[in-house]
Image 1 (tube, rainbow, N blue to C red):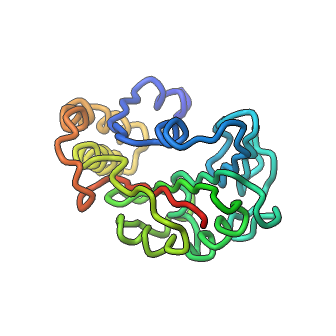
Image 2: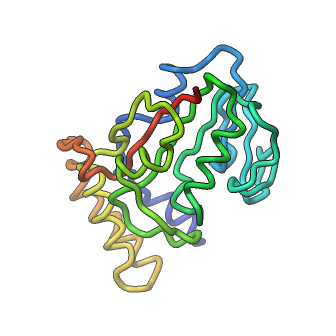
Image 3: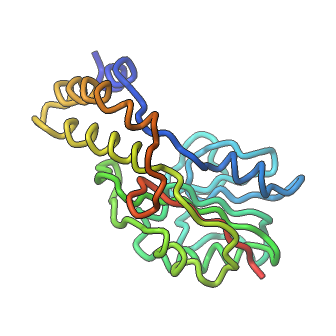
Length: 209
């Protein structure tokens, strides 16, 4: 059996988000807004959404590096940067690029990992506290910033990740990780700690003024 099919069969999601892109768009979304989905793969955020990514995948409209976005100033009403910033070599430059392409009065939504294990799929460079996001995106007017993955989910996900790197055999590790997931799943469901000091991920909503 291929590893991908094996993973699908045994997958248990222990991550429970308390705030995500859908919450942001429903709470702040503009009607017929022009949205830039910056590096977040081919997620469909609406008919007026442009998906950019460093890899050419189905649903991607423009292949580019978010350090240098090939659009002019004041182009977009909303910019979304979801689970991308940790892979960027210069987060401050990315923040400046998002500010540049956003229209005055436009909104930026950013979420990024804080207490999470290393992701081996791509060069995983950084982790961000809520305060760190505030500093990096300080040129925006801060509207909202908080936990998106609470401590309970962070604990469950870390335990799962720890065991999935135990033996070096991907099939054995994934099977053991699934067993551990069943044990720690209650922590994820409880989401007992929403303190951003122990958050699995944090988010920020900012406005260009």
